Image (tube, rainbow, N blue to C red; front, side):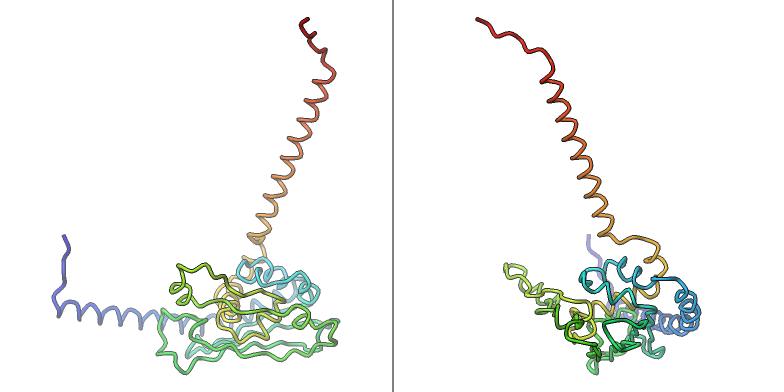
Length: 258
């Protein structure tokens, strides 16, 4: 049996929900303000760990899918990832990648900025980073065309928005998206579905949980290990079969009936 609230009760509860959301929004702002100096202190320690950020970035599943094999040579020079959020409106954020001297870029720091969309409504605890910010293209000074990963491995096409996917769920059309270099998909891109998704992964997952990502291998590594184990088991099975066949060949054969 369904039960309906009276009009005035529904309005009162609606206001309570708004108050709760406002409180949650204030908590997010307070957390951003509180975490800022703590993360800064943590980052100083992480810089002392060799290859910390390349490993964490690779282990994070949400960023791993955008990393091309050729990217690792430059990502190995990554010494620090820093996220700066507007404490008054944490939706806006700036992501910095710091690099040691390398053969690929002359930049010491690559800056990816996510500006708040002017069309975004008031800050809410239910905000979505990718849809409420606009990714700005970053300038990368490549040392040569040969080292230009964005040019060598460009990102092709774009991912569909969730709304578009819902509207086209009966169609068999596939996305025309082909991820190229991480530097093309993230730093060069202005796509909310691509650069925005990577930015959200870094801001909301990789950066705050960096140590956990560093210590735990990525899902893909686990899958590869499982595949290797399965292959080893198959090889062992094949060897057992070969041994069985050899044993059968050495056994005396039954005489055929005349």
